[in-house]
Image 1 (cartoon, rainbow, N blue to C red):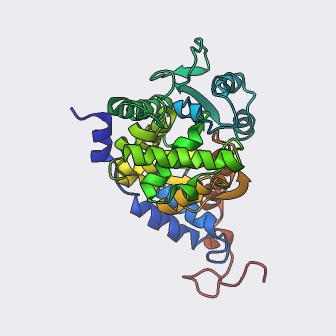
Image 2 (cartoon, rainbow, N blue to C red):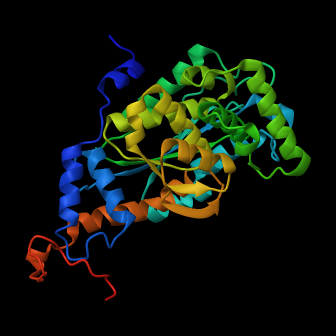
Image 3 (cartoon, one colour):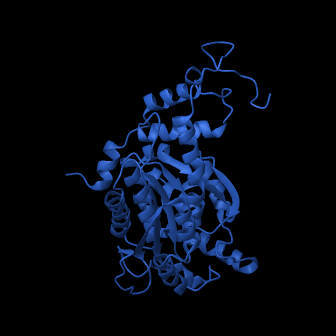
Length: 363
């Protein structure tokens, strides 16, 4: 019997081109000038291709916030101590973080998962316990995790998607928490895209000056030491990744298997997406970039994936915040495709019965 990852490789296919074509044709019958809704039209067609629904109606909004600690924080790469990861997990489960506020606004369910927090967290009703161990090793000194752990956290993420996606298809937003995870994500992005470390390393929690230079130096020295292979995503994950990043890669794969659009948040979620695409290339078509982070590595990763973000609000919070903010725009696109009247239904005349008006909407 194939493993979950191998099964995904065998079964995950391309977008439903018939649904895309039918959605595209429907846009051209609706009461508006052709193409006047800009990228909203393309976004809705992408969701149609992902879900196989010409008029997409998604049942649920899910936000996966995966948490894990990073041994590399011992190198002084973060403005915050590692203790903050556990403290923020408590904040998530109590409903007090930014992602909780935004999720309440859009009616999304937040699923908080301990993938590798460096603390013994109590059993809490709102916390899913999937701890690999208490944080990765310091990848400045040794590989972050074993190859077996790398595969394990990816397949754990796939299992989480299977367990939590009750109604299909659903919106799936990828979020994260982990002090040090911008360092790991920058290392992943540099490796997977072949971009110099200095171009993908940003401020993260707020480091600047000498601390930022130190962060880039730590990443570069680690990559020189471990030589992760870009053609082997599990090798990259095991050498410089994080448990929550591997888990997010699994969430992406598991959600795509269930024909759910995956809305990426910022740097960490998009680093996980690079790994997911490295593992199963077909998953690229199921990704939507919720926003563009001001972290420089995020733009590099988005370009590598061929994704244009829905929003650009100069954010760098993580948690899934940018992905959730994009949800109303994406849902609006799908509702327009579904609910607008056609020219025939509305009794609106056109110059050509086979083609809607082409004048600007303001004319």
